[in-house]
Image (cartoon, rainbow, N blue to C red; front, side, top):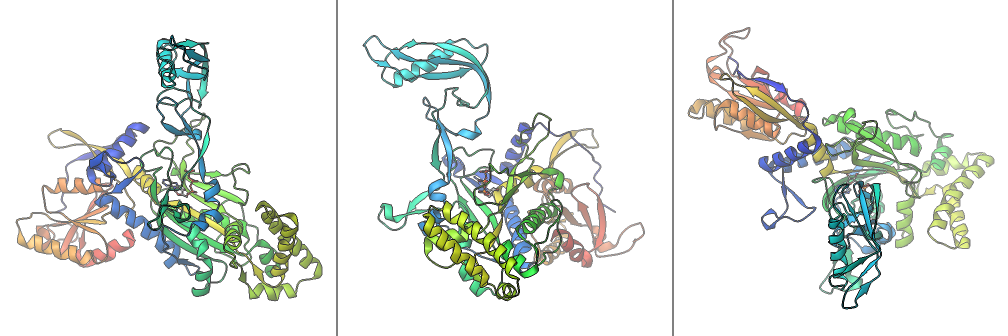
Length: 613
Ligand code: ATP
């Protein structure tokens, strides 16, 4: 007998975006995926903890990334570096000088917002040129506040009076009031309606001090990305791992950014995790010297297995497609993803191209055509040789590699080709060196040295960087998996419940193991035996409490893709059907459609493994 559930499921239409986010947030708390950090003290904005189910989900995602990036590849090795590093690293990377968002403040409430992330508003803006009071105090500071269309002007005047009182003008008499309708403005604070202060840069790095003395020379930073450690250790890894360019270094770990406005649940947090790969490649001039030409690949689609004649464009395309394939492999179909190709204005000066891989979150906005682009999950950037060049400049240590194949190939080139490649490499280096602020004479001298070096087989590797956020991916997986089903039981009672349809690879538990009844020692013993066998290979949840239907529902809500139940037929043999009489079988129940089938206990592991790995 299959354990029949006499329930009918029909899937509801998608709840509205905000409602859906609220449901996801509440489920995450109720089931122990995500909690607010320090919740008993009222929480701390921008910090989140992962509970038992969330911790498993996160671990699975990081393990899958790590395995696919390093263990399943010959050309990528791993690194686990410290969070606090030499502060020079952040000077070399540009973070000390430029890792800033523009921030504006509400002059009344002092609340800060990221200037580029204010939701556009429409309303009536009131302007004041100043205020004076009976005791002679005056202020000539201007003030403006936006109020909803149709709202009486008193509310604007109240805010203005508060503002001038804060400047020492008691019972202010407002001056120069005028009003005007303004549409889609981002200049006013979304809560107070008060016009924001002029934007100013706000560095996002968390600062701390190393050692007991809190002085300027002891300042250190919590890393705002994991990537820089890879560049700083490039030489050590290149020398010890027996890898040759092209090869990559992967790292997973915490990153910290003092975001001005953390928001959208875990999407923009102040402490988060990244999974970053720096894939080092030869400069195109070296590829051309060795192979005659640099391969051209179609601008869309996977370019296939890496080829020795690939230049940066092919490698960049390859990594975008590899990353999309990774997302597809864990249940995020291409339709749920979006792409943003950075425009020349958006690109960093050293970057050749960047493609952001987006996910269509419930809070993602639709454009005028009703299409949803999505929010960034990962950026795949072709960063030229900027990073290693910067570390060479700041540390004074050579970051280049020697390439015997290039040296040998260069010797066989005709003079014209040598000249052409030399010139192109020279010009690219000169452009970089000039940007660093080096004076023209020194830049020209160094660019010539670098180009002469290329002719002898020396170059600084270029890099392709796929950089993904773990927490954003977890949120994408939760949003993607969230499904509601309404079910009507035998007595006509209707209930709506949640099924998290995670891909089995990422699901926190792969299987629930259950004895049909907990007071039957044979059933319990067998179920425990199955649990113990399976848990050598995967995360198993053992559950013997409550009705079997309730137990299935609990696992559906946790996203467990399969449940097995040990019942009487396990011992007595299957009652009817094609396999009647067969013993030592269990019922497997599928989460997504409630389907049940019988399987031999001895075949269970072999059946499960390819599905969950
Ligand atoms: P955004 O434009 O959204 O601030 P970014 O372009 O600054 O992101 P990167 O510096 O490219 O992000 O970081 C790589 C990845 O790290 C991002 O694609 C994202 O997944 C993740 N990430 C960056 N900032 C945060 C954050 N504050 N909270 C969670 N994840 C983040």
